[in-house]
Image (cartoon, rainbow, N blue to C red; front, side):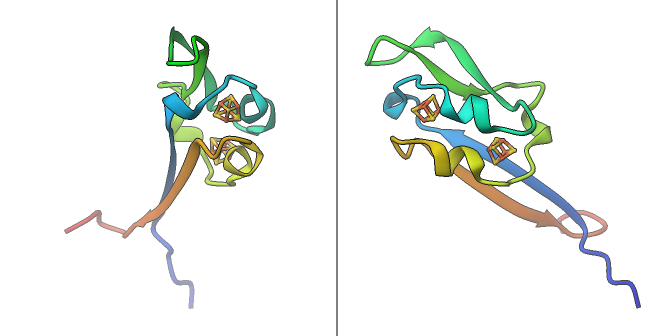
Length: 86
Ligand code: SF4
Ligand code: SF4
């Protein structure tokens, strides 16, 4: 019997004030989800952020979080049941 897993969804949150803009996360993301902001943080750098129109492509692989030397990235994975959330 095939049991549906429902729809998976993943997203990241980047703590911009921890980011030193090394770009490792950008290089490693297989989906091109991450880019540099137009704005700067307390270090005076253009910090990494999730690109709005690409964010939905995140597959939750965690490569970005593993690569980040400043532990600035958190990855969240959840599963939306068939029929949505009651
Ligand atoms: S979890 Fe994977 S797909 Fe999602 S932003 Fe990070 S590297 Fe990209
Ligand atoms: S790997 Fe971490 S410190 Fe480097 S650009 Fe990405 S979020 Fe910023």
